[in-house]
Length: 160
Ligand code: FES
Ligand code: FES
Image (cartoon, rainbow, N blue to C red):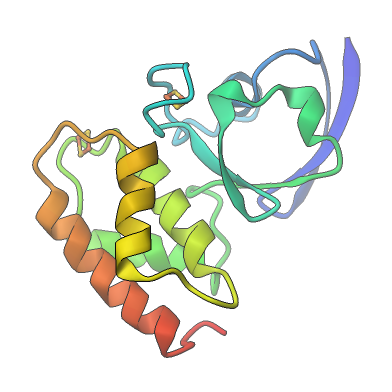
């Protein structure tokens, strides 16, 4: 067992745990972040994506010991005024999901990349989503509509 300290959505967390436990299992089973979804557990589907120090990471393949001292952000813990909160709002307005299983992971990746000095181009964002996320439903057109709105806002520096 090992004591691991990190920030979760702005709050200080200290947890004594098996250091090899995945960040995903700790978030879901110990910290009630059920919006971080369990999917393939192989780092391929993106349903478990969270931000670690602002970078999208698959929490299923991230051992808890490796996030000592880091800041972890989740969609459900999004702070008002953050890109995470804005992405959630726009996805909701556009109804950009069908079953919704993949969407928290997708929103996390989008928020992580918009929250940069140089937001990525639409093409780059689409390639990232294509590489890292699996969605088996039919909400892609609505997701693209949400992405276009968000990318425009990022280019206009709306949250900056
Ligand atoms: S559950 Fe983590 S990438 Fe699929
Ligand atoms: S909305 Fe169902 S898997 Fe993406």
